[in-house]
Image (cartoon, rainbow, N blue to C red; front, side, top):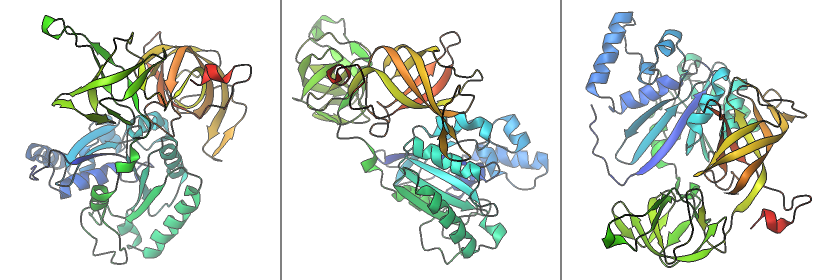
Length: 438
């Protein structure tokens, strides 16, 4: 039963779990919920009935997240399962992502918004190719915090030597990753060791158990508060005559801080104005920051529509139609050069063409392969794109929102790729720099 009294203003942490098949991802999340008594009574009763029916004799904690029949029959995770829970110190949204290589696209989808990623390693197997694959994807998605849970420690006699060996192997590999914070925790998800409470079986481990680490990891510096970005989602124009002067620009702040009185520039038009008011659901405020959803009121009635972006005149993003990006291909039909797609970037929707496939990433060697004639399902590669209208963007490593996009097959309306924009060159051959960077 849900028993904890919650602070409505407690901080939200989004985290994902990943790892190789049968490393215990779903069991770990189930144990986390079970030991913190954050399972509703009817859910617990359903799990108990399922255990009685199947003859398992005890609750299968993995079934708390593995909801598909195929997942329970095969004992693997296929789809991304989202669960919400909270403690008195923090609120959490967890994405339990699949570990099998054929579901890499599902893993990327679940981890794309995470503040933290938990990668499980089977203590008997150590660091395997899927471990490196998932760590690289976490690095590629610029997830700032990583927790390596070395699981099934009960099957190796809770050995400190095994833990140290796996930690050293991972640390050696991690020198090639772009993750600034990595923690290692020895656990047994099945038995609950170091999940909520310190394990009596591993007194040699001095660190915090998993739940306390999740509660205490500092994520305040993860938001981009230095580059004000406001993609316009909707122009609010109430028809009531009492509000004839009201023209709000609604959307979610994608970066930085906006204050009443700030000068702003609308892109791509380049027109300038000043913020006279900021409205939220709870009323007016003097300032707003990422990721608040607000309405901005400007002093001037500028020609602004959905897809435009408000920024500070002294802090501008890139604006252009040509850029390179790293993508994960999610379609059964391979990506070939010169294919046309729809592209959704922040609140802008337009068309684009894939001019060139620069390289394909090889997870065996952890190196890009050149040339790459095509990208197949679950491949990760680097491409060059050209859009029909200019986009206002930042490199993904600087802003995960304004630096990301999806490609859509216009015939089926299916999402075929998720992309991360790379740092553009200082100048474009044959193009004046002022035309590329405003």
